[in-house]
Length: 195
Ligand SMILES: Nc1ncnc2c1ncn2[C@@H]1O[C@H](COP(=O)(O)OP(=O)(O)OP(=O)(O)O)[C@@H](O)[C@H]1O
Ligand SMILES: [Mg+2]
Image 1 (cartoon, rainbow, N blue to C red):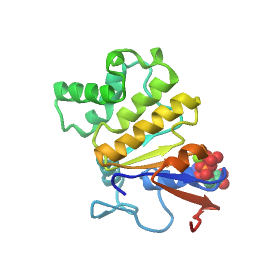
Image 2 (cartoon, protein in one colour):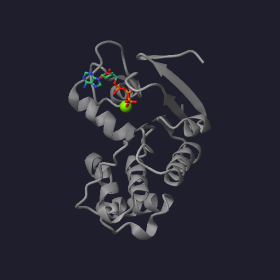
Image 3 (cartoon, protein in one colour):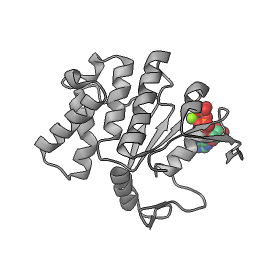
Image 4 (cartoon, rainbow, N blue to C red):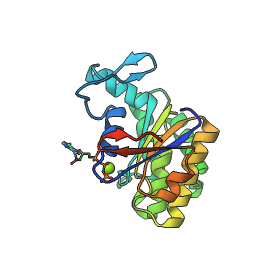
């Protein structure tokens, strides 16, 4: 839902990551449909799925997957380059604004290897926002962080949902954070439990 941060919880192996990979058009479903902006994409071509993924979806994973040989700013610009909607100056300025929003304005020119784990994950949040996606899919985004940094990343994701109007779907094993979401979905054996 727009404006909502929803959490998904459930035992290891119940299918949380699989669900996000399917929703994120990173894996193919065996059956069922996935509709994004009026288009059915479960059975669509790879090109159509990649385009939808780049335009409408943002991803945050447990491991930040930032490119170490690039600066924070350059990492945030990567998804923008893929869609090719903005010129270089606009991309830079937008990436800088996003990093400011994440409290990293003064570190945007640093290589990502010169940032702390919490800072790296905040760069990953900024990168997920680069193309103003409708939905952000986050798989254990705080799984590698201590309590302080986990709270900080969670607060930022909540702010993203509330202030930017995006829908954030977050898988987590951290029940304290899960309970703070606007909505909580519980999974078991590949299915949602009725709440
Ligand atoms: N690429 C794959 N091919 C086949 N089976 C897979 C694949 N990835 C995961 N599985 C299986 O699918 C089931 C669900 O896995 P999934 O990774 O979605 O669990 P999860 O809920 O994210 O668990 P965790 O909390 O440990 O991350 C597991 O039984 C797993 O072994
Ligand atoms: Mg998982």
